[in-house]
Length: 184
Image 1: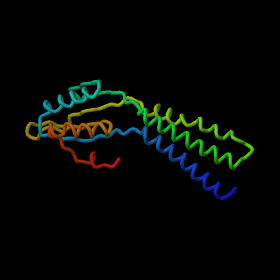
Image 2: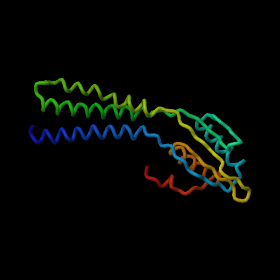
Image 3: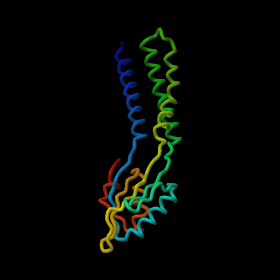
């Protein structure tokens, strides 16, 4: 095997490995738990949060005053654009692998190029793994008229960031700030 083909094969296989890891990262569950405090009483904070979640399409699943818990449910859809992009990347990567195999094993003729047909499989896998039910939980940890309220929120990271950015100034919400400063 000529050295150029060996290095091309290695780079093509690395491309395939990168695509697999990208698929895993794109459909990874990013549920996070964060504690948020407000100087306002819970009877002001919780209804505003619940209304905000309902406006964003979340459906109330459970309201349990004894456990001081509100739970909302929603269906998360996969991104159509990302599915198309992953299908194209999968097709290009499979085509590259087919060309390399064609050069390495000439008796196969042009049959390895049929690997391009596996490209849409990447988009299908992404759509299947990324579309799922998500839950948002609001749990009242403590409530005191003098100090306000403390809540434990459990939800997708993006939803928590949106909540903190949109309702933070209105409700006087503050947390440790790690959610907004994290690079991931």
